[in-house]
Length: 179
Image 1 (cartoon, rainbow, N blue to C red):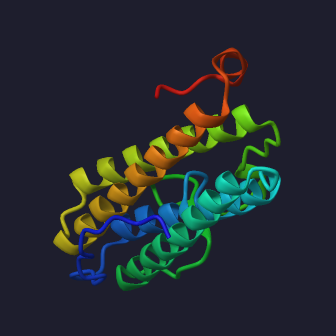
Image 2: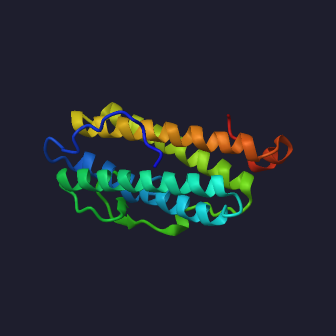
């Protein structure tokens, strides 16, 4: 499993907060979420089966992301939300939208697959760090920052695979990520 060696903060919210709960629900089941990450890594591990190292890396990332999914769902519950795989469509507490596999970029072309996975991980990391800047619960922020550390390891692994397996001339058509 690709996870940081940093210790985990307590997965324990200090109290109820509907705004913070909505953020955790979005982290669990929104478009840029751990459910999307698990599903994307699972698909990519199968689609990359011709490259054992890449398939194994996606499996390890998926296992790590399952832990993140459990943490965000648990925090959402503690913060007062029902931990379904959904997110609010509007910040004012409007209707919820269930997670859908239509959120995922399904690529079987290796350069595009890796580039999309790198982009997804970077967007996730940034999202969690932004949330940690406005949420005022020490443990929730600690979990967000710790998960962002895992995302850095995932990014490093994926970028390393990209450099190793994608020739420079093929990467241009895939939207070569900044490595």
